[in-house]
Image (tube, rainbow, N blue to C red):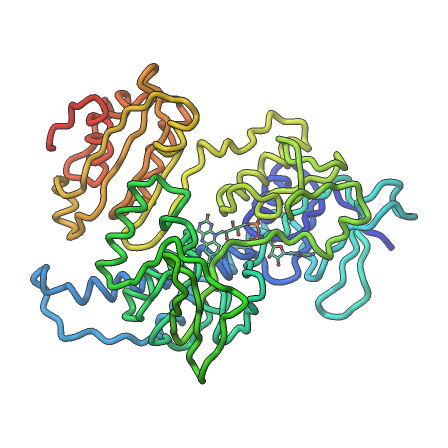
Length: 475
Ligand code: FAD
């Protein structure tokens, strides 16, 4: 017998479960199909566990420096099993929270692998979902009015580079390590690679980063990349940019040692470490979900949708990592809400990538919204910029971390705010002010007019905004 729903969501990661809650709020009968765990990558293999480990690394470093604050301690020790335990407890608590939210919203959860079927006795159009239950019981057929594909993504590798889950790993395995290796080579200096480089170095691991592009965090403003490079080097991280890893030649040379050959400045060299962490991006989960039974189009490995997240089959929507773009949890959830509201005929607000805050939770943290100075120039803007260092911010001195700066990029002609870029303490929280300013179409001088509390780290935002017109007070 087929079960009927208004909406079935394939995948209950951040995008899927948030969309389910919004649909339930709108009075829809909703089911989610999840083959692993409610909460998806972000909760179990991404944002939350990685930030929990980063926080332990930060505490370890803070305790090491506690004498600077007049707090005398003996040499701190690191119990990595406890670090992992704390991380697991945080994940478990949030996992319980998501399960509770499903119950509260009367959202039915099917634990199994969902696939979209073509037209059948159940429905004249594609979209019936067949669930292969995890417990081995008979497949369930669900007939929904709408389907939302939110199947997320998985780690990518490089050609010929096999992830053996032991010596050559991705963030999935790194999050589960029971002990710290003494050395790690990280392939890829993007967000995930840099978070791991920072965290592992802070835990005392010897780290080498191999990045193909000329700079780390290549999607951030160039000044941010330079500052991050400085910060990583200060931690003792060896960073090689313009390094082309010869991925098909990576091999385990002896027990616990992996060799990574790479080309750098015309020479072939080798990095050796206990483990190799591959962080070269993520590919969308589009396989084995039944797309072949539909007219849904894919392009470069992601599902193609219109601006309201409708696929070629207008009753089937797709959101989150599976449609590419900015693969971020808050983007996935915002897209999920917009898709569900569009299904319901509401005035939906799709994600504008220019308004999305992007964060790297390394130490120092990085956060940005809008476009970089380089991108603005490439788009033909005549730009003016203002930068202000945390060195002159009282609260940063009090806090004990004066690394980094805030940078504003504005349009010289109109004063429109084009981008705000930050590196330093707590910038992943502070970026929201800049995101609101972007959303409200503010100018840099309107941000400067905002009275920032003293002493606060946010004063760097006010000063950087003033600096655009050469009016910063404390520089
Ligand atoms: P996912 O969270 O991947 O969820 C998809 C779900 O679908 C999964 O649970 C999967 O099991 C399920 N599924 C797949 N196929 C099927 C099927 N056929 N049937 C049933 N279920 C299926 N983003 C941030 O914004 N901030 C961060 O700090 C951050 N840190 C990260 C750190 C790491 C190490 C990683 C890997 C990612 C990080 N991300 C971060 C990215 C973030 O995790 C993703 O952008 C987000 O999880 C995408 O949400 P989603 O709902 O699209 O997909």
